[in-house]
Length: 384
Ligand code: SF4
Image 1 (spheres, rainbow, N blue to C red):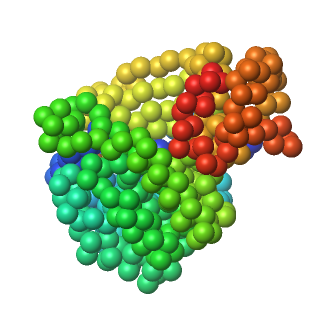
Image 2 (cartoon, rainbow, N blue to C red):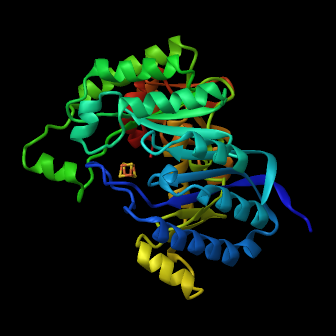
Image 3 (cartoon, protein in one colour):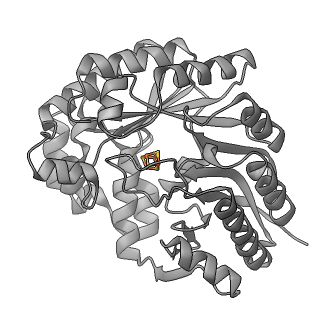
C-alpha cells in the first residue's frame, strides 16, 4: 500500500465539555457527566471507523485535541481515544500531539495519562492571572490551579508547553497582561498564543455590553498592548511567526500552521469540528444530540460541504499569508493564480511601502513590518 507522505495532514478532535460556560464563550461546549462523555467517546469511535478507509493512503503529522475543555473528561478517555486514532490512521514518527488543558481540571494523573498516550505538547488555557477579573467573566480557574499546573509540568520537565493569553477583556489592564506574559516567560513556556477577545452575539458578555454594564476596549489601547507584548516577548527570546503567535525557535505549532496554509489538509472529528481536505470544506453538525444520533444511525456527521473556489483561495492566500511573519510568496501567488500582485495592486503596494508598513524581501515575499501587525487587517484589505 503506497502512502503519500509528501503532504502530511492534521487531525483535530473536538471535546465539547466544560464545567460551566464562560461569559464570553461562543464555542460548542456542554456541561456533561461521565455517562454522556462515554456516549460521546463511542460516537467518536464510530466516526473514526466510518472515515478511516477514506484516509488509508494519507499520513498525519499533527493531532490536536481541543475544546471545550479536553482535560475535563474522565481519566482514561484520552488514552482510549489516542489508541483508537493510532490504530486507525497513519502518523509520521515526529507527529506533534497537542492537548488543551484548563488548570482547574488538570491533575498529575491526567498528565501521566496524556504523556503515555503520546501527547508531546500541552496547551494551558491561562488567559489571564487576574483571578478577580476571570471570575467576573465566568472563568473558573484559580491562581492556585495555574501554579499547580506549572508545578506538574516543571517537575516532569515537560518540554513543549503553549499558553493562551486573552487580550481585550473589559476591565483588563495593560500591567495585568504584562504580568501574565512575564509569568509564562518565567515558567519556560515555549509558545504563547495571544487572542483578542471577540464579543460574539448570544454570549453573556454581549448581553452585559448591550445593557451598558461593561465597556469594550478601545482599538488604540489594543494596539498599545500588542506592541508592548511584542517588545517583552522579543526581549525574552521569542519570535512572532504569526500575528498572534510567538514561539521560541523550533517550537512553532505545526498543527496551527496548517490552518494558515491553503494547501494543507486537516480532518476534524467530533461535534462542531470542521475539515479542509483537497480544496473542500466540511462542517460537522454543531448539536451534540444530532451528532450522537447520526453516529448511532451510521450517518455522516457532516451537515455542509463546500468547494473553495479559486477566487476564495486567492483571498485566503493573501489574508492567511500576511498573518504570518514570513509573508506572501509573490512568485508562487503568480503561478497559482495567474496574477502578478505587484502589478494588479501596484498603487497600494507603492503607497504602503513608502509609509513603511510593508516590505518586499530579497526572496520576493511581501511582508507586513513588525510595528504594523496590530493594524494588519487594514493593510490586507488594501491588497485583496
Ligand atoms: S473554558 Fe473555553 S470552551 Fe469552555 S466555556 Fe470557557 S471559553 Fe468556552
